[in-house]
Image 1 (cartoon, rainbow, N blue to C red):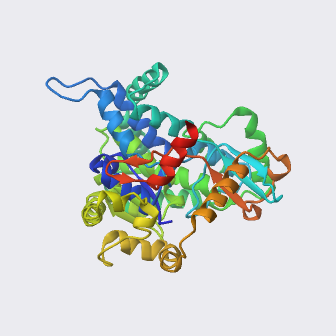
Image 2 (cartoon, rainbow, N blue to C red):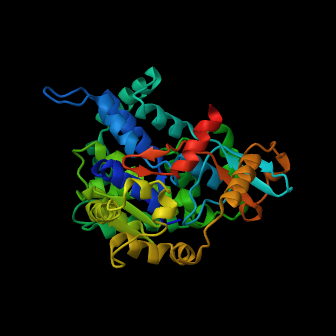
Length: 421
């Protein structure tokens, strides 16, 4: 498994379908909620005069490229914020926060969690077939209307009244530093919480527990007390400071949506985007263990890989991606290979020493996984720490073939179809 990669809509749209297959294969893509909403919002666009594609066509094309094998829809940042404020540890680098896990014990009694296919993944599957629910169309219209009604100049004006101007804040790094100073300061905790609540809806019945827990801890800085909640507040403050300082344009309402991708940076090794706002702002929030990757550069290297592997015959491709290319092929100095060496060195070394699995062993493994996924719910497992869980199963809707590539071995797909008949 390769690096955990956050990607934005602009990058995925730039890929051909076959290139999207290899991005899904060589990375563990994070499908953040904003990507889902932005894609859905395209449904409300009007078809341009003379255009050959309808809004439904555009969404279907994006759905055809959306990762399905290793990627997973991520929990919304507001849910993660609230959980963090209530004392739940936020996922760390390389851990994608998922929703809907069902605690189980396998036949061997070992604890684990089964994640059913997410509503977002099912929606993308429907969109690939051109099926759209009326509720989704209504949501798309509401989202675009919300963006149109955002008054970013007013936000900038309020911050300037507090002394934030192009003269007092001249760089992206300075804007980040101002925001970081606020969330790292040990003062006015209730004001910090109120400010966070203006960005993240916190149910009224949780306020007492959140404030009491913070009080019991002696009101340390928000960054210390609830690191992920502090990170979200830092991104929001940074955006408003940058608006006031004219470092980010207040004339484009879409900038508000684009900056929200940064909420999901803490979980990812790399952030891939072809958006210049991301290129300018994301590096200020990344640690030395993370990288911002310019979308066109990654697309170029993935396109090279696709060309090289396209030399294989159709028959050779039928063994599936994991056997055909267990690690990035070709030029070891290529961008994909370089990212693997930095962020997933164990995956690269293990693929070299892996012994091929026999058909009988594969059959037994599939039987074990199916049995685990169907195991009854075990309430006693729900409270166990993540490091005590023995197994994790994620159900996926994966087509046998996408574009010119077999995602799973053709013989496996044929056998499954035969059993269904």
